[in-house]
Image: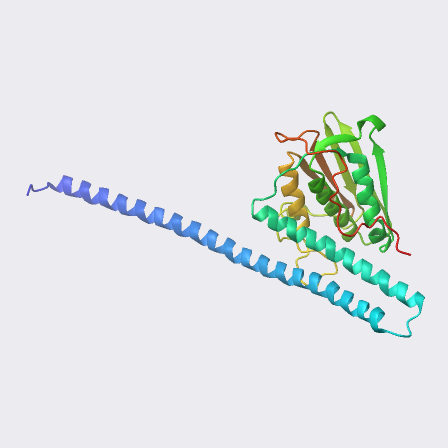
Length: 298
């Protein structure tokens, strides 16, 4: 075995110390990354737990009301027609809300499973928007709000080629979001217009507004600016995440302008033609939600 000089021995020791230090540094970096991943997993579990609590309440509560009220109508012998109409109206509202929440849950599951594909139809965009406004006008009226449409689309420019079910989900969630977070009576302004090959939809409320910090998280799944289980605002952090996911699938864009205390404006930009895919049919595509809020009960 060849003997090393003092200089060579010191150089070898220095080299090994440097290698050991680099190994420790890499190990620290790995531990730091693992710690971040673990923290994200903990946060994810907390968010999912909160989501399940909210979702359970928003499914069980209206379902229990529907069962109880319908039982009162079915088995009561002395209920007059006015009382029956009152109970039926409550049942309708509970069922309408349950239908909306379930559609969001199903859409989120579809996105999570990677099964949210597009079906292109020739859509009357103006008619689609008007139906969604009619659908939620009673929900808005219950809070002293009015949904006002500013239509800047010419009669010969109503149509576009896209996926109507996804556009409906986007628009319905944006409208419900505006209603939910606006506490003072007044108008919610909905605007539609053409911008070249794009259709533009925006909804402006005069609600609480969203801080810059919260604007970075509101499109994340399960997250809400008011995450408590017992919040008076319904929802479980799925609506805006669905808006974002479906907008991306449609090759569109979603923008937000908001000032705390003054309100928010969400703007949806949808391309007239999706990339790839064949046109499946006309706007008479026949996939309405179970409960069409455009119908007046009484």
